[in-house]
Amino acid sequence: MKMLLDLYCVFFRIGGLTFGGGLTMLPMLKYELSEKKQWVTEDELLDYYAIGQCTPGIIAVNTSTFVGFKKKGIPGAICSTLGMVSPSLIIITLLALFLERYMSAPIVAHALTGIKIVVCALLLNTVITLAKKSFVSPVCVVIGVLAFGLAMFTPVPAVILVIVAGVFGIVMQKLGRLKL
Image (tube, rainbow, N blue to C red; front, top):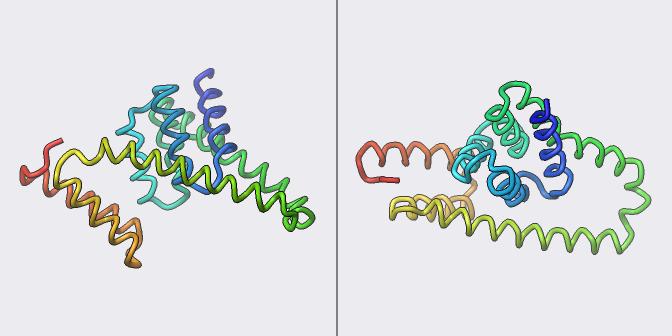
């Protein structure tokens, strides 16, 4: 029971303290789940995150469900998912009550601008850290550069890029050209 409560509380904190969606949660997920709690390795987190992008729904919620399931099965998945979505439900409900009155206030606009800047910096730091662990061979670098180029300069959906890169990685490993 303690682990279920811990799952709920950790994901409640992550869901309540990060703004901007799944990608912006990655630094906090990495810190809380891999470094602090050591519930998953960074590689497992990346795997869950990649699967979360390929499955329907919100990436952060999918990732929390996978981690909860790993720790305590279906009850863990439920508790971690509820923990991740509860802050959003509470915050959206409260914001809906006061949004119209305060949205035009300059201090709110400035606060949101500051939050966006910090989120970008945290996301860049996490991307660099995870790239160092992911680019383990020239083949991985090529896959990463191609995926980045396609994501930035074409309308190819991210889910297609993730699936194609995954299949390509499997094929290259089977051909003996990709060793991890």
